Length: 313
Image (spheres, rainbow, N blue to C red):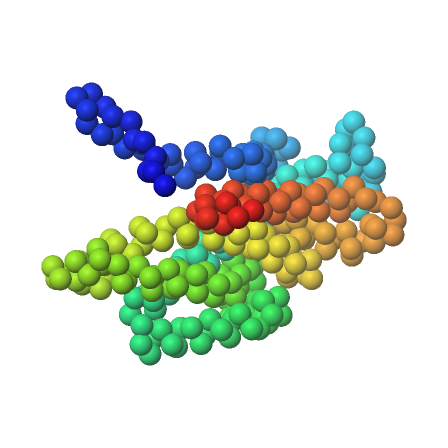
């Protein structure tokens, strides 16, 4: 088989084609472009909810009738307190997206650090980290998250304190998701690190006297970055679902409603039995669309990072 021709530049000098960036490769694919477009819409809703629908309505500032169906004044109807469901849903978008983002950062940070260090160091440390990871993989995430949420809230409290504008009760959910979701990321990054540490460029770095910290930071980490990004995309979708589930069972914060908390409120009021579909459907559609968007992005990343797998399909 002949090698593909490489275009020659001026004077006959061979010029290699520059590989497009990861984001550009994603946007060139239909599934990646569709996923990015959906996420862009929800990102805008999360960034400027006050501009789009006004401040978050409360029982005091509510102006509509109770459980009113969609109308010109209230496009998505109202809840049992007369609050606009459009206002609540848009503000809930910010809470759900922020929790998903922060939980993903915590998960990926813990998983990437432990995966790189355990894969490179090996020995007893690697065995210990992997046994702990196996524990988190075997125990059902949702059950463990409920237990940890109760424990952490008892330690930290559930007052009105805020961190970066997020109430402490929601920060607890972020920490719980990060603690219960890092194991799969760590295993993926560790397996790649085991392969990378045997490469020639790592051996050369050892020969010239580079320390373990320098090698992991300057040689291992850059080569697993794309894998970390791809895993973060799927982790974000899982974090959204976990937060929704925890809020749905009453572990959310009614003063900063998320999509899951709105679903829990609809269940408490009995909206499905009353036929008030507008109470729970907007939040449900938002969850489905965001998870679907991350699934599309994950599919695009899988095709880009695993071209051999794509060629078999």
